Length: 79
Image (cartoon, rainbow, N blue to C red; front, side):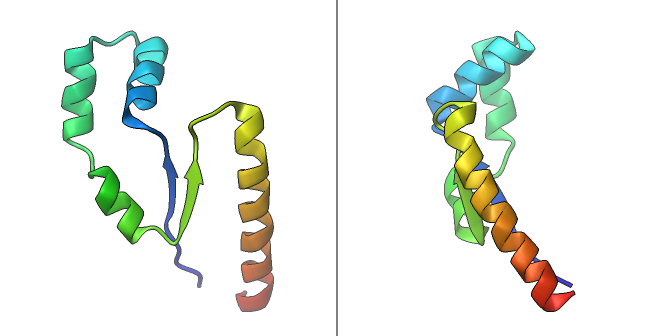
């Protein structure tokens, strides 16, 4: 059994922009949703692994691939 917490994080302004584009919500609705989620600092403190998602999908791929390989190694070692 492997127990790790992965957090995918992005700057708040970028998160708001992406939510607005994706879900067509108002700024007020988005801020209400974000206010009811765990705070960024708390998520980061509890994370074993963090992916920073401030760029493009192309920027994200190497981070995901690196963690995927790491997780495969953990699975091979402990499972």
